[in-house]
Structure formats: C-alpha cells, structure tokens
Length: 464
Ligand SMILES: *[C@@H]1O[C@H](CO)[C@@H](O)[C@H](O)[C@H]1NC(C)=O
Ligand SMILES: *[C@@H]1O[C@H](CO)[C@@H](O)[C@H](O)[C@H]1NC(C)=O
Ligand SMILES: *[C@@H]1O[C@H](CO)[C@@H](O)[C@H](O)[C@H]1NC(C)=O
Ligand SMILES: *[C@@H]1O[C@H](CO)[C@@H](O)[C@H](O)[C@H]1NC(C)=O
Ligand SMILES: *[C@@H]1O[C@H](CO)[C@@H](O)[C@H](O)[C@H]1NC(C)=O
Ligand SMILES: *[C@@H]1O[C@H](CO)[C@@H](O)[C@H](O)[C@H]1NC(C)=O
Image 1 (tube, rainbow, N blue to C red):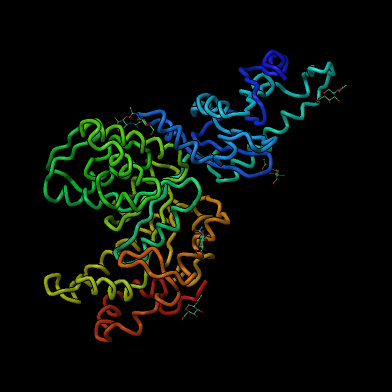
Image 2 (spheres, rainbow, N blue to C red):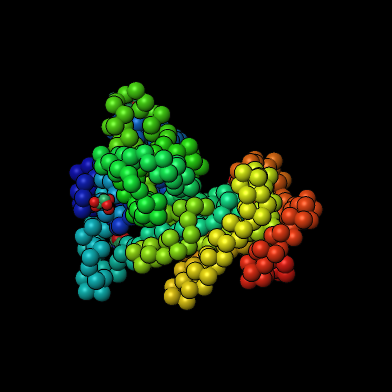
C-alpha cells in the first residue's frame, strides 16, 4: 500500500512503512496504554516526555516498549494500539512510534466515526460496500472497558488516599502494599522534614518561588501539604519536603530525586527544583490513586479534608498497642528522657483514644470513607486483607500486586529492617512481643490502653 492509497482509508495523517501498525485513540487521563493485538500491553506516562530534554524522554519511552518491536523490523505483522486520551501528548507519541522502522501508522481512525450514532449512518467502505453496521465503532466501548477496569477511577476522578497511623504500627509495609496498586502515586511521610522545619521556624521555600515565613501553625502547614499532594500541586510543596530522603520510598516520588541527580550542575538549583517538581507533578497527575502515609497527625487534624476532597478515603491503621509500644521502646521511645514506660504509654494511648473517638464520629458522618485496619490482619492474612484495602479504595488487586504482596510477606525473603517493608514471614513476627515484652511493661500498657484494647478487641481478634 502506498501513502497515496492511505488517503482513501484514513481520516487523519498516515504514513506507510512496513510491518508495524499503530493506532491512537483519545480520552481523558494522561496515561498511555500500548496494546499489541496479541493481548500484551505496556503502560507508561506522559511525564517521561515532558523532560527538558526531549530526546532523553524519548529514549525512556523506547525503553518502556519492547525494543525488538520498536526499533527493529524483525517481527512480522505486529499490531500495536496506542490507547490514550485527549491532551495526553498522544500526537507526539504516535509520531515517535511511527518512525520505528517498518511502521504503518493511522492517527485517530475513529475520529469521524466515533461521534455518530451507528444506527443512523451508513458507512461507505473503500471497496464500495455500503454498511450501517460499524463494527469498528462497537469496538470502542470494549477497549475502553478493558482500560477502565484497570481501576474504577474514570467516572469518579482521582482517588486521594490517606494512610493515617502511628510509629511502629506496620505502616511502611502497608504503604508499600498500597503503592503497588496500578496507577498509584505514593508519598511516604510527606511531613517528616517539614515538621522539623516548622519546629525550628525555618522559612519554607517552594519550587514556584513562594516563600512562607514563620510563625507557623503545624496543623495548617500539614493540611496545606496534604491538600497540595492530593491535588498534585507539587510546585507548591515546600522544597524541604521534596528533598526529604523519604521521597525515595515512593516508586514515583523518587522521580524527583532521580531528576535532581540527573540535572545536577547543569542549571541553577532554583530552576532545577522547579523543573523536577513539574516533572513529578505530571507523574502525580497521571496517577489515579494518590496515596500519602503519615504518623504525624490526628484524625481530627484531617477532618476538613473529607469535606474539601469528596473522593478522599482514609485508612486508619492500628496495631496492638502492646506490640507498638514494645517496638517503640526498642528505639528508645520509652527512655527516662521520654518519661519512661509510663510516659510513652500514656502519650501513645491518649493519642489513639482521641483517634478512636473521632473515628466513630467520622464513620457516622462519612460512611464508606474511613476504614480501620489492624496490622495483625495484614500480617496474618496479607492477601485477604490487601484485597479489602484495594476494594476500599477501588483499585484492582492485580496478579502482579498479589505476587508482590506474597513476596514481601510470606516468601521467606530476608527481612530488610529497621524500617521494614519485607518480612520473611509476617505472620511469625507479629506476635514477637508476647514472648519478648517484659510482663511489667505489658501490665502498664494493659492498664492505660485498656479502652483501645477492648474497643478493637485486640485480645480476641479472630484472624479474618
Ligand atoms: C539530551 O539527552 C540525550 C540522551 O540522553 C543526550 O545525548 C544529550 O546530550 C542531551 N542533550 C542535552 C542538551 O542535555
Ligand atoms: C468491503 O468491506 C467490508 C468491511 O470490511 C466488508 O464487510 C465487505 O464484505 C467488503 N465487500 C467486498 C465486496 O469485499
Ligand atoms: C477486552 O476484554 C474482553 C473481555 O474480557 C476480551 O474479550 C478482549 O479480548 C479484551 N481486549 C483486549 C484488547 O485486551
Ligand atoms: C497551587 O496552589 C496555589 C497556592 O494555594 C494556588 O494558587 C494554585 O492555584 C494551585 N495550583 C493548582 C494547579 O491547583
Ligand atoms: C516475586 O519474587 C520472585 C522470586 O524472587 C520474582 O521472580 C518475582 O519477580 C517477584 N514478583 C514481584 C511482583 O515482585
Ligand atoms: C509463618 O509462621 C507461622 C507462625 O509461626 C506459621 O504458622 C506459618 O506456617 C509460617 N508460614 C510460612 C510460609 O512459613
């Protein structure tokens, strides 16, 4: 077929080469899915193209795709569907793809068909046949359905998820499980350095040039910070937070660090930060699930977020207070300086009590938006409990995620503590405190945390 002939068939721009066939479809979110008709697919996001250096962005995309079908013409008849959304950089991406050797490319073949009601129009095929049955149009919902089943997000918009919990409560593991939901953008402890900055009255600078000066109200700074992450307003996140080493713990948030390392010394710091923040912003915007974990806030601190972000879901992770306090004490959290065992126990139990009471109020006012989760359920029944977590936020528990959860909780891989995301046998480690915790200390916690232990039934929790 020649380029001229293509004009008979194609409504948009086309280019005839040899073996490969690419198609682009348009829609809403900035994520590309490239299908081959054999059913395999690759997903990648638009931010790879928005780097300052376009050619390095293109090289990244080339790596995402199977190199053998992008850069060599060795396979016959590889059909590739680039399924994506309006304003997602698809023209550029399609153009990149069509320059692979042997590509035959059709730009938006459904453009003029998609808007019409098939029952009212007859289509004249290039071979002269008239038909009112447009099989190609009916293919659209089927393909879209396959993509939207990746997550339930299309009709609701992005889902912000807050994992609110306490030190030594299994939150690293739980956060890591959540960030393996497809389409997740995860930030581990976004307030970690910012809290210290606020305590020491450091002025907060932002990638967009804004400077916020003390005095600070931590609750207010925290609220803004969470809100900006959830809405992907990354250029408005304090630089202190972006430079936090914890950013490396998020599979996508680490892009900021990588970007900064990449362009280190190539431009003035201010511009580098702004550029990398914008790149991260694109990665965030492309992600339907925006997940933050914090051990630094009370439920009452985030109450207003439930109003301001109508899709927000809160996962309240609680671990048996005896296990938490035993583990905290190993880190020196119950030293004399901290008020001893009585001091740390009292402080911790008071805080969880406040959250339990607030949770009861919020569950009534915002049913379906807060979920208490117990670390022992995750540790003992990782797959079952993860399924519940994913259901709660509306994510699909893919085969890959299941395998990942299995690997990090049950596969016998070496523990990677001290901030653990991998347990060789999470079920085994969960009850360690029962053997190792000093009975006097247990008594102190039983006494002071009595309400929480009863309320959440920690002594008789059936394994779910
Ligand atoms: C852009 O990236 C490419 C590939 O990584 C590299 O070869 C080139 O030198 C870069 N150009 C600039 C201007 O940094
Ligand atoms: C023309 O193309 C249409 C659509 O592919 C097909 O249904 C029809 O059988 C073809 N007609 C002839 C005469 O080849
Ligand atoms: C979409 O899903 C349907 C039903 O599960 C399946 O028959 C079809 O092959 C899928 N299409 C693609 C392109 O994966
Ligand atoms: C980001 O936050 C700033 C300050 O609150 C606001 O002016 C701006 O409109 C926000 N941008 C987006 C894209 O929401
Ligand atoms: C799980 O572990 C196996 C064996 O180490 C590895 O081959 C596989 O890629 C891992 N899967 C995931 C999803 O991490
Ligand atoms: C993990 O430890 C628990 C408790 O000791 C034991 O019942 C279970 O069989 C172990 N699981 C694996 C996969 O070794």
